[in-house]
Each structure stands twice: as C-alpha cells, then as structure tokens.
Length: 256
Picture 1 (cartoon, rainbow, N blue to C red):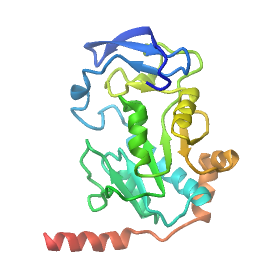
Picture 2: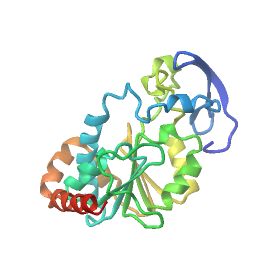
Picture 3: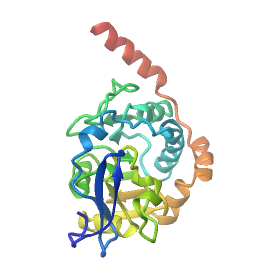
Picture 4: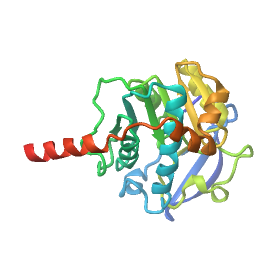
C-alpha cells in the first residue's frame, strides 16, 4: 500500500482474542499491514480503546513538543489543526498555550473543544496527526486528504524495529484492541514523502514531519527533543486563549 510492491505474509495471530489475522511485510520498503481489516467496526466500539491508559500523559508531552516545534519552525500565529483529534484534549491544551488550534475527527465525539471544529476548505499552518497513521487502511489516500488541510504534517507513530517483529513480540501491534493495522519503517515514510513531493524529517523512534518547506533536520530534532522542548516552551511563551474561549463558550450557550 506504500510502494506498490508485492507483500509477503510472515505471521498470523489472534486479534481481540477471536479474529485470526494475517500480517504482511513489504520486502522493498518494510511496510507492514494486516489482511483487509473486517473487524474494525467491533474494534471501534469505543473510539479511544480502553487499554490506551497513556492517552492523557501522551497529550501532555506532545503539547509541549508541538509548542517547541511551532516556535522553532512555523508561524506562531497559526491557525493549526489536530487531525484525528479524538476527544479534543490536545486542541484544548494547545489553545491554553496560546495557539489557535482546531480539531478534525470523523469518528470521535469532541468533548474538550466543541467550539473549535476545523473548517473545510480552510488552510492551516501545521497539521498534527498523533497516533493516527497506524490506524489507516489507505495511508497514501489519507495523507492526500491531510495535505488538503496543510502543507506540513507532524505525526507520531512508532517505527518498526529493524528486524521484523512477530505480532506477539511487539506491543505496538495492539492485538488486544485491533485498531492498529499499518506499521511503518523510516523507508516506507520516505517513499510516501517522495510520492507526495514532500520533505521528511524524523527523530528516529516515533516523531516525524512531512512538509513542503525545507527546514534544518538538526533544528527539527532539537525542537522535538523532550528536554529541549521544556526550555523552548518557556522562552516562547504565549498568552493563553483560555479566557477568550470561555467568553465564546458563554456566548454560544446563551444563543442556544
């Protein structure tokens, strides 16, 4: 699904304890995919799976890192979009930090930022897509949809280990919840970038940026380094949008 080469089945395992699923690996770009995922309706009975106990802490860390990346590489005045934004927690946290973030998600209720849904047709300075790509049945098609929103896509997804792991030997396969169906190597991300005429920047393990703009790979790696981000967020502090968002919520409520 990335480089169009023929994939080969290398493993089979139980997903959600009852679906026997085959796993295929590409010998060219090392992309791993499941067989056609007929179990997804059941897997998404709850949009955020019950075992994702790191949901809040991950958003805390990523809000700090995204603050740093914007301060170093993008216009701080936005606007920005969180794609596949789940309950809207990340959008709320970034707005609290002073960044004009909006949320897009076709499958999940917006609990924390209901007044800040992304507007179709509007262009955004940066699109974030955290823990999204491993859920995609059609990665290239979805990437094209993301580029309709923004020329720059900052994403998190854990890269596959150098030696292709069996499903039961790597936690990121997510056998318990069944929502993860696509797994990327750095090479497969590079193929995607090349097909879409994008630059690819990566910190190696899990944070990556597709962008039409050229930036320094060193600056990217420093901006997304957790310790550097701690410092950058304080140097590049912004006025929180909390108060004005509260006023907007009051106006919206009174007009209903």
